[in-house]
Length: 528
Image (spheres, helix red, strand yellow):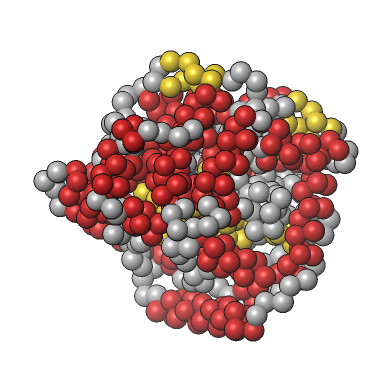
């Protein structure tokens, strides 16, 4: 798996030649984790967002995603992934002190859904921004149904070390300003991730089976699966059904061609989708009998509706459109969105997984990344769907640059490219955690039975459990784990203050609104 000196990518070799490899370690890592609140018997919770957790509109660390029952936990970014994971752990500890008899579902795919309406849409209060967030979610319901929106995952936010950029800029010899160079390099990272990101689904996908209740509002889709037991369907070799066509991906957006070859191209193509009317959505109506059914009748209501495995991100100011934030200030970090919850870990992600992903993203950055050609989107999408639905199938072949290659061979080559970066990240470290994480995944490439998806099915089979029972019982063990630990007083006080402050902030926003909601929306969408 080792590489010789002259096979290193030029960017990495130059960093080593300049003796600046220590800079690689300083990238910032943050996590966003969604978790569905469920009852003791596994049904989706119908209760409102717990008051003790603060305001879902303004709390920086504890909010909701699509549903009032779908909690989202957000860590600040840290250079040390142990701090990131430690913060996520503390959020869980605090949240569990306010859940009563409820618990957090440890799987990405939901169970305990009775019908589409059993997924309560998140409420953010009476402010214009709160109404907009709610109306956007009502629009998602009318467009895609609520059930799909109850799926949970982990988003991995990564910011390339600040100190690395001036060096890479100088080494490039490019006569463009540093900010433009940074955005350009981030898009190179994204394009490489789109080509190779199927690897994340194979290595860490943990959603090979689904409760039949997930299909109560779309029973015709059950025919696409095999029956695991009377209550569960699956694909025998699936890795991440969350990332298949029935989950996170959206068939309605299959025709969108978002440009990842430049920041300007990305902003323009995404903006065009937000401003292009779509007849199917026009038929739904926008404001009907005084109530908003969606924010508009265009291909996308807002940027967040575009379902992508990785997003370029910039922190938006209050009320600022994400595309404008990118256009004005460039790319600040990337958000990787293809990670399933790991049911075998109480916080949903292992430290070794987080380290592997950091090294993988650095590899995507430091290797050449040619512009995306016309047919490449379809190839990347096909590879992802193949791995999502049958990634553990013996002899599975993927499409690399128009040629068939086995998943195992391609994966092994990607891991070989990661090896020198892991070695550099481990410099001055006695236990070599990045190389250990890499070696662990090399074993998983060689032996598909070690994948989380295979382990989920093996546990269900060994215990003769349907998916819903397995998910609920394992989630109950996670609850016991957190309830058995005492959150340190300083941390508890910090989270309590954050909750109280967030409630005051929401009240202040609601009190300061002067525009009608119609005028607020008009102003928002007219930003240029």
